Image 1 (spheres, one colour):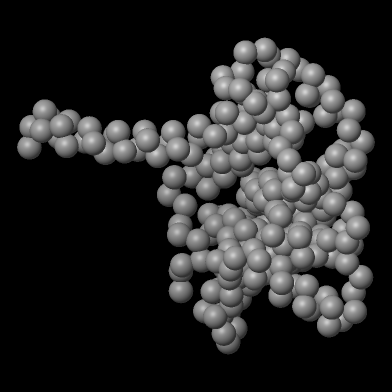
Image 2 (image 1 turned 180 degrees about the vertical axis):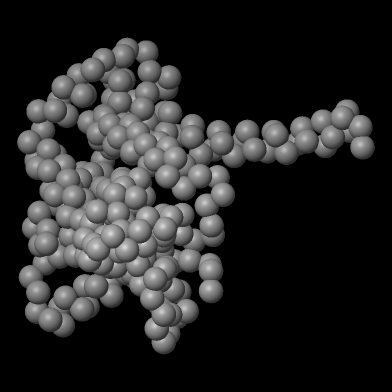
Length: 273
């Protein structure tokens, strides 16, 4: 087939792909533009640009309280998910036990289930045990729901790990615990950082699970949702633009760290027998 024929056949696909990207990203661009529009959300394109909405945003105490709540929950979720995810990844990579194949599938279940199902299930469990809804229950919900993210990332890192270093450490007299902290964990540093960044980003943006588990204190997504019910304001556009910028930055850092740590030939996650 000639290059000219391939070019003609590829042109409709290129146009289709361009239309899809415009459909996805044009509203995001419009949102960012409106965050600088002096006239608010009316009138397009914006004619009078201003930073007034960002100044108003930084003076909004309730909104920043919600940001602080989200940061607390996200930080705790990273710690909990990485701890339990590392244990699960070690079990999948190093141990043999009955039901391992089923456990491997169950680890991925939170990634497959809709957030509303996960949130409702956790709510029913917390009501059953008589727990009071608060930021602590949101932290537990995020931490457990995101274990699967940590497990898949750390499992991939363990698959790339050179076991000879651990064997040498044990041969030189180190205990298994010393080998774990001085050899295994340092070699998993990039995978831990990548998983932590991704979990932090997902926790900051989580709304479905948070909606069912939160008490009186709002996280940032719920604070925005509550204000949107009263109407779209330029201040919401401004905070959305900031969230977008931070999320993109974290995802880019995660991708670069993961690529550096795993390489292009990383194995399929959790697919090995």
